[in-house]
Amino acid sequence: MSGQPLVEMIGIEKHFGGICAVEHVSVDLYRGEVVGLLGHNGAGKSCLMRILSGAMWPSGGEIRIGGAPVRFETPNDARDHGIETIYQTLALADHLDAPANLFLGRELRTRFGNLDEARMLRAAREVLARLNPNFRNLRDPVSSLSGGQRQVIAIARAIYFDTKVLIMDEPTAALGPSETAMVADLIRKLRADGIGIFLVSHDMHDVFDLCDRVVVMNKGRVVGAHRIEEVTKDDVLSLIVKGELPGNWSARTLEAVQ
Image (cartoon, rainbow, N blue to C red; front, side):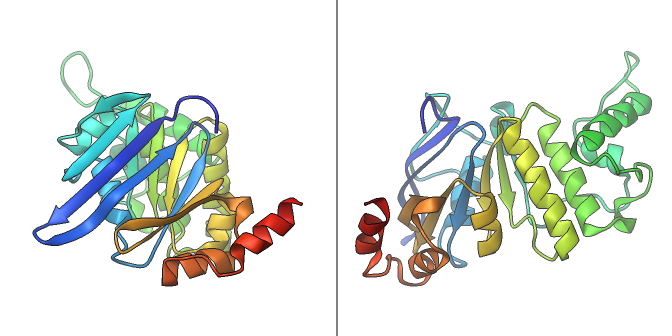
């Protein structure tokens, strides 16, 4: 990729006592790019993303935004730099409607200090229409919505606040085929808008369908970082399970470029 990365994580370490959860990991992300982050449970990928989101402090290494070093003490620090996270649980308040969830903790207020519900409703309608023109259930509690609609609300909440980097943790987990396709379309829209996305996923189909690059972690280390067209699903599976590419990978790659 050319130009300045949106975000760089350089030599990141995370220790829990004598356990090294993340070992000297370096990854980067560019504007309008989707990078898939894969690995077994305990591989260190979620820990790495928690560090980027400000939810966890690194033991070592450096984070750079637009080339400048930064330090995140809290998730709000990361948000102030345009980094938002959509967790697998979505972290929505089930009893509240879409506008209330969109602005939860960042409510808009009138000049008298009261909640400006009319302005929040208008803003929610605009951002949700941008993602899904068919979204109509703005006033329904999110507990009554489908998994795909809930995912739309979570994405809308993330991108409304001038997001540059979006971390998505298993965005299609527990969704049906039609809702999975809808979320995939949303990711493509966000990429087209120039948002950089870290996609944490176990779904190999999603990764090969949506990602520009793939980074595989194993036992806290990066064991492979490749453009998606350079590898097959079997190659990535070998990295996840064994921590290395198949023995014939170099020969296959050389043959492909000749």
